[in-house]
Image 1 (cartoon, rainbow over the protein chains, first blue to last red):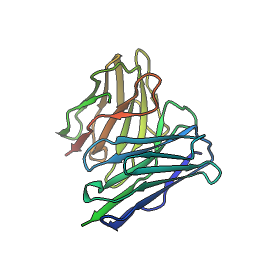
Image 2: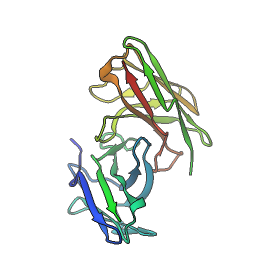
Image 3: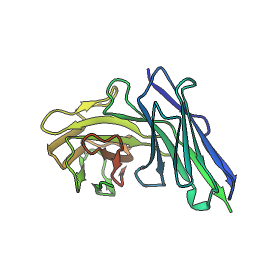
Image 4: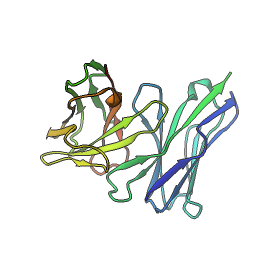
Length: 113
Length: 115
């Protein structure tokens, strides 16, 4: 069955440093992978999508990589700020139905001043 | 981006009663909407796919008679939690995608507390 793992339940880093979050998946070769941000008590908000033929995607201070051989995506936030503190979710289209979106367990990121 | 609105944002109900949650796509039409459930400090678990004009498709382990889904129009899907029990207390979130798009737009979620 499809599995998506985000290796850190929580990550605490110093403001200004680069935060790196990891997403690994198994038993699947998705056409794309997405990252979302979720704040407490709110629905997720889309951040970035990277396709299987793209190795890297950037958006402002965000960078995502996609290694289809390792079945892994890395999500980087450079020059991190306390406002970046949130839970970050990795998501893939469903194995049985690409219209579905299946989420990883998420990583709670805390940026301390 | 597209806007999905969910109502109510929170609700408290007595055990045994039913609760209806609405999910609306405000500026686009959604033939398909998705309902998720999220327990504290856990990820979103897909419950069902809501299909306009037809029956919803439920994920394995989700009771279709307990979680009734109706998608009567291209902009509205409803989730009714029937005969609610305290274990149904959770955060329920809906999402929809613009036709042809991969990005999902989420409602603000509904915090259900059953007492």
